[in-house]
Amino acid sequence: MTRQTVSIVIPTYNERGNLEKLVPEIFRSCKSLNADVEVVIVDDNSPDGTGKIAEQLGKKYKVKVIHRSGKLGLASAVIMGVSQAKSDIVGAMDADMSHPPQVLPEMLEPLLNGEAEVVVGSRYVKGGGVEVWPFHRKVISKVATIMAYPLTPVKDPMSGIFFLKKSVIDGVELNAKGYKIGLEILVKGKYSKVAEVPYLFRNRFVGKSKLTASEYVHYLRNLAVLGIHKLTHKTGRKQRTVRSAKNYHETYKELDPRIYYDALKTRNGMQNFWHRQKFSEVLGEARISPESVVADIGCGPGVLISQLPKNKLTVAVDVSEQTVKFATDLNKKMGRNVKGVVALAEKLPFKDNTFDCVFMIEVIEHMPRELEARALSEVKRVLKPGGQFIMTTPNYRSLWPIVEYFWSMLNPVDYMEQHINRKNPESARKSLEAAGFTVRTIRTFFFIAPFVAIFSQALAKKLFSLEKKLIPNIGLLVIAKAEKL
Image (cartoon, rainbow, N blue to C red; front, side):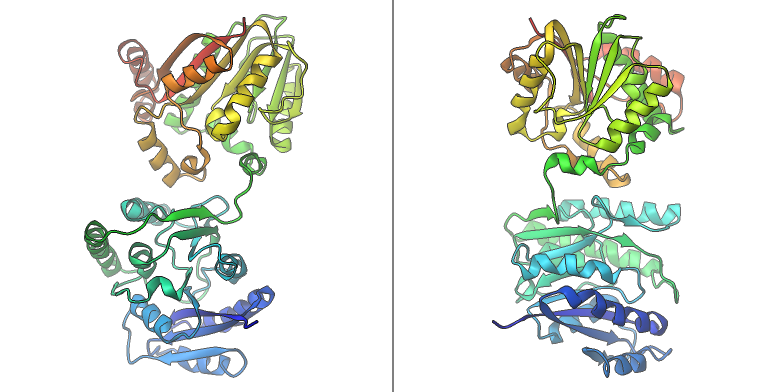
């Protein structure tokens, strides 16, 4: 059977110091692949001698060098390199060492195995990130990504490292200027499956950044042109996946419990207000006595438990062993009687009629819809007769989807990806009643108040009280109180 081939295009201009390190790392990283790899270097007549170094590297490695007469731009260099590559799988990465070669096998395997037609290296899916960036650079990158969202569902459409099957662009006219050729391919390309692979963007070690004001102008122009293209050309639906996706509960085993703990303790007025008022609303619905046995399912770092009235026993339940340990350690230091249990909501390891009260605070939206009924049935089973169940979840019949989108773009936790079971007051009521609960109250809270808290906590609290009285049905979060009769 003929081995598949891969061509990696690297545009260069004054990248001599980086290229000498990058090329050997590429070939070392790709040794494990069942494919033949070539590197295509497109040099724009670099005055520092990058072209000569590329020729020397070609004597030791499978490197093809294309010399151009002058500095003609990254996008056109990628287009030229791809057009002259003979491989069926082609792609591009930067020469400045910002894209780690170690990610190449994971990016190329979906293409070699037929699992995807386009693969994008992503800074903005779980596991990806940026090593060190100044605040203004982060803001510019996020804003640019948000602006591109109407054009593609890919989380990092401005990524400079991407690979594709050459058939994706056969007959497609590519004419982007500047740096964002990947975005044009995502919009115009002929494909149905695109995968994103997380990677850590590293700052360059040698040389200077080539990002200038003119590149921002080119980007805005490209957005306008691609927007018109998308409106005037019908394309099939693109199926986006995140490479190495696990079962829903496996994802949360890896989360650092301090993410949510720090969110409550942060000085960020909005986050602080959000969590404190949320837990206040939850506890306001609860009926807990000194003899109550309570379970917090999906306990996270145990902050809700730390605010409960003194009770006989609280069981901290989560799918993550490190999260359960964090929650129990935190509350035992406060003198609380807490027991930690690692378990799934749909498989609770407790006897019937164990608890007086069960909490599930923003848990059900993370759960596949087909498991929801089983989880609610389990909660009802372990509750004592007359026991309370209190649940919160985002309200998708409010402005929540907009909040979720911007929050996911600007923070490390991607709620758009995590929230797979989207509820509203009506659907939450139906689910509880179908599980055999008697629903006592169901309402919503949070509208504008949390965002006002950025400027004034006192004003936010007053506004929050007004919101609950005047607009009780359009809040961002649903809270439901149900009983087992």
